[in-house]
Amino acid sequence: MQIGVLGPLTLCSGNRDQYLASPRSGTVLAMLAMSAGRAVPASQLIEEVWPDKLLTNVRNALQANVKRLRAVLGGLEGRPGEEIVCTAHSGYLLDLPVANVDALGFLALADRGARLVDSDPGEAARILDAALGLWRGPAFFDTGTGPRLRAEATTLEERRLRAHEDLITAQLRHGAAAGPAVLDRLSRLVSHHPERERLVELQMLALYDDGRRAEALGVFHHVRRKMVDELGLEPGRALAGVYQAILTQDERLGERGAVYAARPHLTS
Image (cartoon, rainbow, N blue to C red; front, side, top):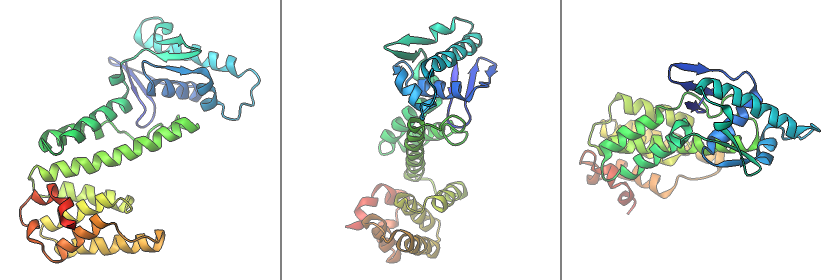
């Protein structure tokens, strides 16, 4: 059985898909899925599903949602639901491999790809592209209303952006020219996240690599204005170093691909 939380909640076993009609049961499942193989205390589930705790029989309500969840998952898997959602340590445990939850699979792939960016950028790009392909929309799109899942969603979104940065770095370090696909991806990401200086650096270097020096310098000035006006901050040393290298057409920018691996040295 595969559980998807990187977007709307999905349940799939073989060719069978299942929809959870109860949003509260979906929230319980999302919480259990993010801790697959580990017990989640009932108190944490209650705080997530009923943060105001206005119900007087909240534990009974949790048990009812777990019962409903067991029925759905058991029917999907063709085995007793109690074997899938187990009672354990004053809480519940989802007996499912980590790889069967898309968010946990994404994290594992993103970390594996990041480790290979320097040593094997081609393989890193393949892995990171697969990791990002698991996303179908905002994490916990229809289940993340409680404090823990909101925090998880923020963490996952940060890791997703880092995976984009690692993917583009790997693609450029692999020696390929910054083609339209890479430049379009960078343009979209920077427009939504101008505060992420690593993305801005990559966009500037990719534009320079594509023979668009004036546009690369323009990106810096645009982002700098936004940072100063909205945050009262100047760009960091690394971003300023990339700008200076492009402005002076530093000879270290001449070797295709080498600039991306040597980026930290551009500030020296």
